[in-house]
Amino acid sequence: MTVPQATKYAIIGAGIHGLSTAFHLAQMLKATGRGSGADILVVDKTAIAAGASGIACGVVRNNYFQPAMRELMAHSVDVWESDAKTYSYHPVGYMQISPECMREDVGSIYEQQKAIGYESVFIEGAGASAKYMKGLFDDWQAQGITSVLHEKPGGYANNKASMNGLAAKAEAEGVRILSGVEVKSFEFGSNSGAVTALNTNQGRIACETVVVGVGPWVNKIWNMLELPKAITVKVNGKVRTDVPMWKFWCLEEGTLGVDPEMHRMNDGRFPPVLHVDTDAPLYSDRDGKLITDRLWGIYYKPDFSFGGVQGGASPYKVDQDPDQVAIDPYGPDSPEFVVGEDFIEMWCSALAHCQRRFEGQMPHYKREENSGGLGCFTPDNFPVFDVFRENVYVIADSNHGYKMIGVGKLVAQELVGEKSKLLEPFRFARFAKGELHPTSHSPFPWS
Ligand SMILES: Cc1cc2nc3c(=O)[nH]c(=O)nc-3n(C[C@H](O)[C@H](O)[C@H](O)COP(=O)(O)OP(=O)(O)OC[C@H]3O[C@@H](n4cnc5c(N)ncnc54)[C@H](O)[C@@H]3O)c2cc1C
Image 1 (tube, rainbow, N blue to C red):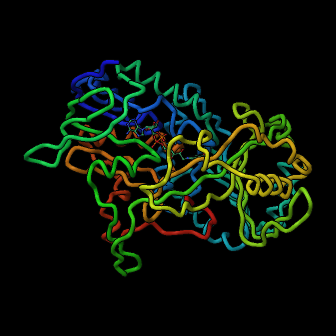
Image 2 (image 1 turned 45 degrees about the vertical axis):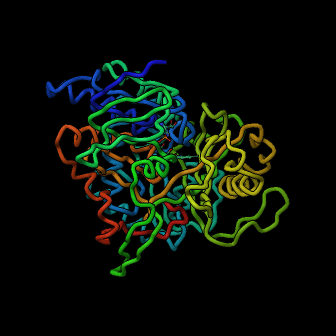
Image 3 (image 1 turned 90 degrees about the horizontal axis):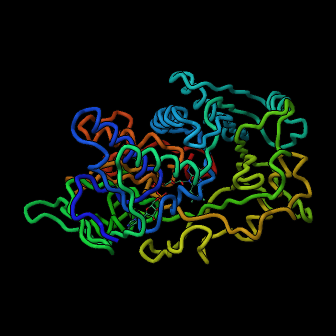
């Protein structure tokens, strides 16, 4: 393969962020008379959707405790809705179903959704919550629930189909996307720290601007850019030095191989994506033993592309030096970071805890297909969208990002010179300044 010797914009990674940036940047260059998609090259070491975007559950929601995240998600939902067909987007809505310890947090999410015009319904109290849920599903039986947030927009999209749709839109604008081109190192200017070229396994590519959208591989590219492995973070006024910049969590997801049709609502329609957190004890649907009596959570949806009811549970922390974590082979091909028996028993039992229709269904879990995968997280578990070394725009979504299709549009806007207010709360300097995002009571690191 021959790679071009030079490009104006070099985008590394053909996942949601690289492709969305490429497509929107091409449109903006054309609209402003400053160029076109022909000025943009996307390189991916493997292929389109080879990373986290290609295995994501695909949930698109607004439910975030952090105001800046909610505003960003509302913007992304508009982008999903702008071409639902090409993005393979299903606008079924999303529900956060919670126990008492989360009621106040979720109530504040609802209030702020009202303030930004994001349509949702909030139900409070055990009786009212059970009645609302039984109105949707007559077999609803989850315990310990005292609030329900029902977001009317949002839903989910099909991971690979949406990436292929996005890639086709970028290519139609003249963007080149090259698979099998791995960035191995960078060349820096002699009078500045800017990147002047990518050194790839297929040759050198000179460039004026670089966009990094490499998902779980961000630590590797960060090291190649010679950025700090450990940083200073101010938390509640206290300065902590030497905080590792990156850490990994392993996401646990899987599919119950039943007919997705079995998970319709009382009125016959397909349901919103359901996310249930509760502190009610969880017992095994296999043998009745106690699985946990601590706060637990799951999410699920009927999904024809996964061939069943698909979803996941809380991730676990990977307790290893980030430089030593084996990211490749990634996702289902990983010998190390795929789900095991504990997840299968917990998730299937949790489904049965929530709805009677899932009782006794554990044998249908799709064991033949590996699932789950790594995500790379920042010190506060929220994204970093910022420019480093003068001309390198890093999109590090801290594993929040399949739903964030709009981020590429905002990054493209910044690349043509228009600062985005929505991206401002995600600058790298927030760590040293102590301008961190608030944390919630959710058992998930991404809520
Ligand atoms: C199991 C799982 C489920 C998830 N579910 C959801 C969900 O339901 N909703 C949600 O919003 N988010 C979800 N996420 C998170 C989301 O998938 C990621 O945050 C997002 O897809 C990251 O997108 P990206 O474009 O940054 O990276 P990726 O999609 O990972 O793409 C990065 C690309 O960069 C390429 N690359 C890496 N290094 C190099 C290099 N040196 N040279 C060239 N190319 C390189 C890779 O081959 C890859 O194709 C999930 C994540 C996982 C793991």
